[in-house]
Structure formats: C-alpha cells, structure tokens
Amino acid sequence: MSGGVNTAVVDSHGRPIPLSERGPASTWSMISFGFWLFLLSDIVIFASLFATYAVLSNATAGGPTGQQIFDLKNVFIETCCLLASSFTCGLMLIAAERRQLRNFYLWALVTWLLGAGFIGLEVTEFSDLVARGYGPTHSAFLSAFFTLVGTHGCHVSSGLLWLLVMVAQVATLGLRSTVVRRLFCFSLFWHALDLVWIGVFTIVYLGSVHV
Amino acid sequence: MSDEHPGPELSGNRHAINRNPRPHSDPADPNLHVEDDGTTSSGSYLLGLALAILLTLASFGAAITHIVWAPGLPVFLAVLAIAQMGVHLVFFMHVNATEEGENTVLALGFGIFIVMLVVFGSIIIMANLSNIMPSMDQLMKMQR
Image 1 (cartoon, rainbow over the protein chains, first blue to last red):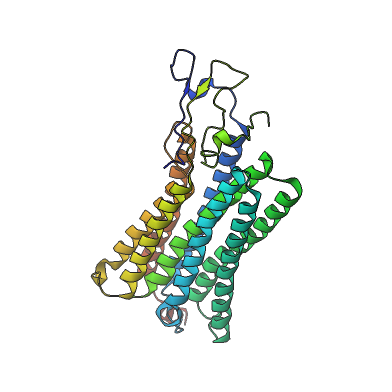
Image 2 (cartoon, each protein chain N blue to C red; image 1 turned 90 degrees about the vertical axis):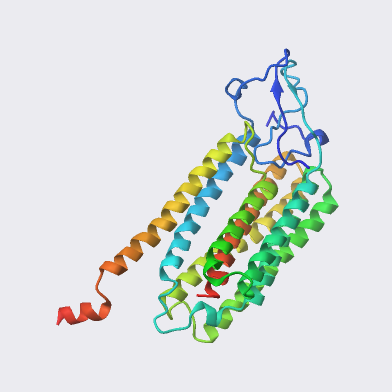
C-alpha cells in the first residue's frame, strides 16, 4: 500500500541531500502546497460557522429543536453519497494519472452523480423545512443551521461546477500535466468537503439526538 | 513546467500531496537518484473507504441506539469524528510526515490550532457572557 512518498534523494555517494540544497521546489510541490493553504483557510471559515452553531444551537426561541426536525435516515444517505463520491474521486484521479481516458470519464460521471444526489437530498431537506415554517428566520438556531449546512452545500455545488469544467478541459486539452494538476487540486477540494461533512453530521445531526 | 514527467513510472505517487515529482534519474543532474516504490495507490483508497464506512456506521449506530452510556455519547462521537477525519487526511488526501510533507503537516497543525481557538474560544466566552449578563426580561425591567 502506498500513496505515501517513499522517496529518498541521495547523491552519488548515497548520502541524503538535505531539502534546502535541492534547488527550487517543483511546480507540483508549490501548487499543491498553495492549494493546501487555501483549503486550510476555507476550513477556518467553517470553524467560525461551527462555533456560531455551537453557541446558538439551544437558542430555539420557542421553535423546534434539532431533535424534532432532523431526519437521520436522510442524513445517513447524504453521508454515504459524499463518502462514495470521495472514493470515486480518488479513482478518477488515478485514472487521470495513468492517462486512462475512458476510466476517467466513468469515475468523473459517478463522482458528479453522487455529489448531485447529495445536493438534491439537501435541497429537499431545506425546502421541506421552509415549507413547514422552519426557515432560517424562525430562530437563531435555525439561522446558524442554515448558514453552516448551506455554506457546505454551496461548496459542494461549486465543486460540481468545477468538475464539469475539468471534464470539459480533459475533453478539449486532453490529460496533459497541467490538467492533471488541476484535477489533483479538485480532488483535494472534494476530500476536504467530505472532511467538513464529518463535522456537520457529528455536531449538527448526531449531536442533536440525545440533548 | 520543465519538472513535469508524465511518464508512467511515477503514477503511483503522483497524487500524494507532497510526493516528490522528480524522476528516477534526472537528466539535468546525473548524480541524483530517486528511489520510488512505484506501487499503485487504489489500495490506499480502498482501505480508507473501509475504515471510513466502519467509523460512520459506528457513530450513527451509537447515536440511534442506546448502546453507549448517554452522558458519554458526545465524547464517543467526537472521538469517532476525529478518527474519521484522520482517516480522510491520511488515506484520501495523503498527508504524511515525510521530509517533503513537513510543510504540509506544519500548515495543518497551524490550521488545527486556529480552528480550536475559534471554536472553543467562542463557546467559552459566550457561555461566560450568558452567565454574567442578566436575562432579557431583567434588562427590560431595568430600563423601565
């Protein structure tokens, strides 16, 4: 099993060359590190929304509590969709790196459909809540809930748009190295959204059950 | 882009966040040799998926049923969530503590520090505030 970097850069005498003496970093290192910093700052945004939710989760203003309005079955299906799409996204990246065009299109399609299924379920949940009168204006708890989960949904939606753009780029430019680098950034973004969703389903949905 | 080598020999490691993109032998520097395990990484994704499914099922199961002692449930769920985040970071995003991954791990550590500061700082300060502040009813009475 790999994925880790088991590389050792050595000179002609077999001695390891220190990182500081290997010349400028590669384009790949710089891009992946820069994108990693973007993702971390994005996660800090989510942290502030999580903090807001944690502070306001009991401020129901006489309205419903989370236990009364959340449907855990729906949340479980959403979680499965996102986890499966994270996995197929990894397979998509492997296919892209091996320049297997057909596999790439297949896994990109599966990833997109699973992500779209997640968004579909979330939109259904939101519209159902609003139809029952429990919109974001109902209480501070619901405002915080819609902001946190809605921001995550917006990120997933923009990820779906990004994936469409990437498929269009592969179709026109082919799997050249710049395109594969962008696909790599997309996969990091997609995995990070799944990471945030772990926090959402644990704190927002499961945390409300036994309160 | 001169550092790009789209050859198949690197495909195994190509997607690790901090993998070394150098080829086995760099034509620009004949003294440089890179040992690459060159193995495929779909196994890493499979293992990550299996662990993530187990942890997800465990947290949903614990929340729905009453297997776990109720006062301990929040801690149990938090531990499972942190474990699953770790699984995602290691098996899906390939964060590792190799020499080149140092910067990634350092940035991640700083990110976690800021996240903890924001979340727990907000919770503690707001809980304190609501303890000290008189309630809204009392405030209204004081204004009269």
